[in-house]
Length: 153
Image (tube, rainbow, N blue to C red; front, top):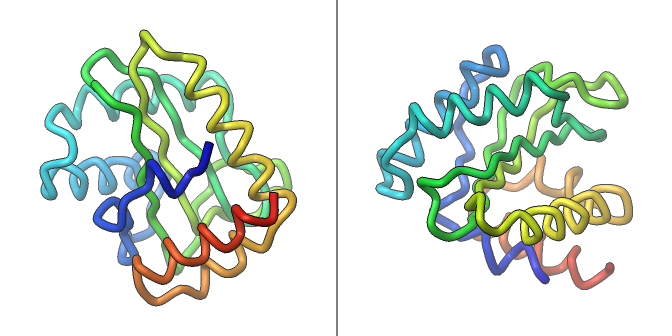
């Protein structure tokens, strides 16, 4: 299972504005809707915020992985956003989040989401993905970094 199979270049946003957790997720939903990737951004945002209330999705090194299982999502997908200023996603290491790797899936396929979350955690711990992504200038460069770093695990 490779993350780059589910993260398309047009799902990558390099200009997300900082704010609080809810504001940033709302911006990301609006960006995904504008590109026609999602249609029910309010439903998805509500589910993401509900999931965040159960426990923080901030990992370490400045990355958070907000995720939710939603009936309205037919096929699982990932989106990635990079922010210049950090946002508090209550990360394990207390550092501000500058990269959001959003995972959305269908409630009927929870096993897939667990596998991809485990893979993301390995990617963050065992590679330089976060550090390199923070410096990337284009979506294509991020995809290239992801492929290169995934080969290491």
